[in-house]
Structures are given as structure tokens and as C-alpha cells.
Length: 235
Image 1 (tube, rainbow, N blue to C red):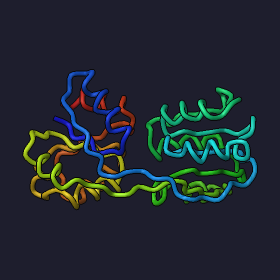
Image 2: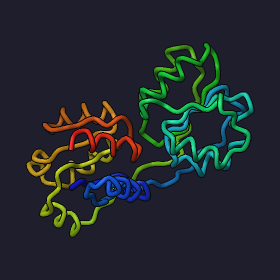
Image 3: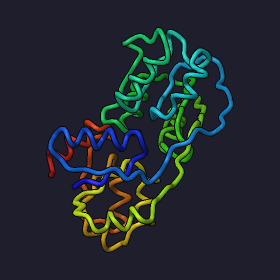
Image 4: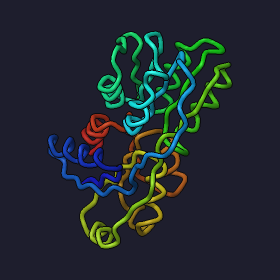
């Protein structure tokens, strides 16, 4: 059985996607995502990077200022791209890019291939997340503004946690380092070391290994599709 620890509603979406392929899974969101105040953007960027569907509220409010017909938009995954197309009119297909793999490294690969020195870049993300993107872009001569528009807050249910440790959990799915820290601080360490893990990025994978987790598989992104593909390959 898989334990899906990402926030809702994505946790249940991933559980449902796994179930369609015959995998048993349960959702136990270890964090919740909440919007935080963020100032309005400067006008009209050459490049906009969207790191999550959780940016939707802020993007909806500021799209007209942020994005023009010439703006190149890089999304971390298909879900973020679909969100953008729902809330912003007039996005040209050749100006919309989806990261492959669906992580920070994938976003950077696209950005560095299309950006020119001194272009203006807006990075729209969660507080404390995606910390390698802005420094790398700045090192390559880009003018980067960061907009932290949401944050992750830990949440746990003690009774549910006791129940989880008595279930036949084979694999724990984690999609951010914040979630990993919540899991590591919540469950018995020896119990966790006996479980298999699925990490949604190389950074999460390395972080788990550094903390003594021995059976870790790497998914090609945090989307439900990437998680299902990893499950099919390794489980």
C-alpha cells in the first residue's frame, strides 16, 4: 500500500490515479498550503516561471500586469500549464513550456535555453521552495524578481498516525522536502527506515538518503502521472 503525503486536493487525486492502475493507496496530507500576502508584480516580464498550481489565486489577480502576448511562460508541469490556460486568455502555444522532468532542474533547462542576458524574469513560487532557480538564473545574467505567494504549513492527526503505523504501508510518496521533514518528525524513525520511499525530485531523493532512508525510488516529477509510472516500474 502507498501512503500519499502531499497536500489536498492533490493527495486524493494521486490516490485515485494509483487506484485506476490497481495500486492500493491512502492519503495522509502532512502539510496544507495557504496563500500569503505578496506585493503586486512589476509590469510585463520576458519570462515567467510558475512552480505550482497553488499560485493560481495570485496569478489570476495579477496576470494582466505580469504577462503579455510576448511573455514566455515556463510551468513546472502539465497541471500548472492547464491552470494557466484556464485563468489567462491569449497564451500562445509556442510561448508556453512544460518542464521535463517536472521539477526545478527541468524548469531551469528550459529557461537557460530561451533566456537572453538582462531579460526580466518573474519566479512565482511558495515560500522557502525552489531555491536553486533564482541564483542559477542570476548567475546567467538575468534580472529575477521572486514572488512568494503561498506557504506550506504542517498538519497532523495523532490518532491517524498511530493507525498508519499499524497498516501495511509499503511505500511513502513525498513531493517536497517540507513534507519529508514533517514525515520524519512525525513517525517512528525505525518504522520509516523499513519502508520504501518514492521521491518526486533528485533533491528529495538525496535528502532522504542523507537521513538514513535506504530504499528510495526516483519519480520523474510530482504529477500523479509521474508517480503512477514510477509505481508501475518499481512496484
